[in-house]
Length: 216
Figure 1 (cartoon, rainbow, N blue to C red):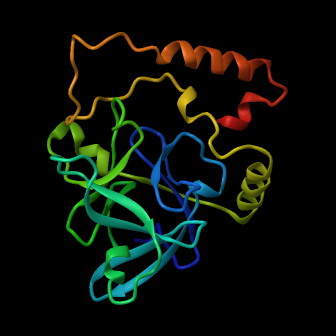
Figure 2 (figure 1 turned 120 degrees about the horizontal axis):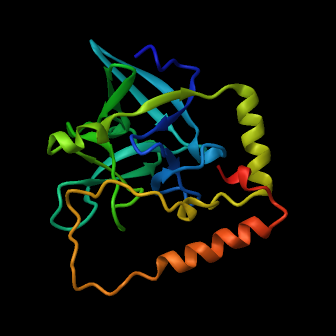
């Protein structure tokens, strides 16, 4: 719990080295390799609840990271995680119980399920749900590194946001990711055309006057 304080602004980094990001639409959340920018910053509000160590995480939209009961995909166990306005009387849905696991943390929602960073093919890629680690292969998917954001970093991030689109190059990465245990692959599927688009996008970035480092 000492990783979170009442005045902390933090980033949460998943097992895929991606950051928990609040989308610009003010509703969705996802993972992104882009650590800079307001979307990756979460303001911590510590909650006093007996012996439990709980926090609320507020996005730059002023909305709270909230576990819902809506399925991420029909028939699957994972539930959607969204940004929501504060709900008096249902504020417990914004609470996350913090459990330390070595140098990382697990965040358990009001439903007893954990904030989980998914990988694999779309729609699982870069998604965030609340779920259980169903096997030893996915036990790390609910672990998060907590990075404190200093005031000077916030200023730099805001300057970056004013000059570069927050969409950035999340899709430029061609790194492989562990497949989601829920994903279904078919040998009869047609060849993907995504790689050719990625190559064009990367080539365009290299010829641009904007340094690639800003998309890191």
